[in-house]
Image 1 (cartoon, rainbow, N blue to C red):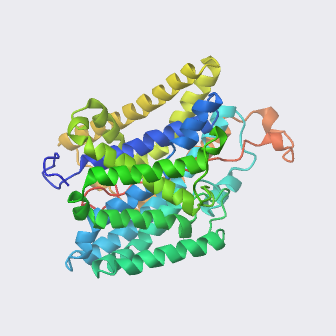
Image 2: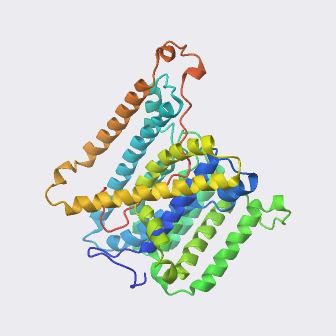
Length: 427
């Protein structure tokens, strides 16, 4: 990456990666707000949720890119290889722990929002632990982290053609039998044999970063931009009377080849376009705000659900039917999430500068920390559920479906976080 980018004393950091992930976060937040019921007329709704939707493919691609960029040099170093590979496996376990804790944590929202307790809390907890409820992106990401040592070995041994052919063949098999390896949770948005193609493409992009730095970026931008326009017209042009010149089918669940090409072309168009404009963009305060969120994608994923839970009811209660009111709500949601990221940065800074308190004893082993976090989320759910109970609700007939809170729904384009510095200790 260009040497002019700011670096820390410990390790170089490409601020563009944080910025790109921050863009994916904002896109995810806006898409989920619209899909969860923010009132918008058909045109703006389709523009946000369909025409410009790239967060899901963007996050998966960026996840692979960062792995290829950071871990391939470690894989090529015999002294660091084993530690790097074991770190990826530990990271996968950490991600699964976050998935369980966050999903149970999300369950507490519904009794608070509806003042309607769950009829059987343990049923919902059990469904989460058995991967029958929740978003399937983080489990998919954890599975890819476990597979990363094998992928890195192929790249290290210069066998990337084998990786490409194997990934394509696995995708083709997945299109024929899409639900064979799908998790039992509803929707099955991120089926591993299908979405791995985008992840592997990202790893290859990270591995061949040097060649990208030497490429003719403007020409590459024109090519991928043309492909993005072509696939977008093929996916959404028919209602506008545009000719469908694409032979592909576009669908996200299960993922189709056309949607893979659309995701990859749209994502790389955004990445290369912002890269070309980076000398101007990097001096903008907006880049700083977006990058701050991009540095904390896992935290932002967990908290964005609560931001939606706060902003959406207020928008429905006090907003009007105009699009301007909904756009204002979207702006408030983005600013609120950015403010949370800023507060987290300030807290981290104060903690590192407060030399009078040693936080090291609080860093429990992963085998203790994650079960404790899951148990804490479960305890919060039990307490929250009990707090909203009333004698009327307790005496309600349990066979009455209205006596239970709504089934859990977690957005299906939740982001994942990768370690974006050489440190591999889960934090």
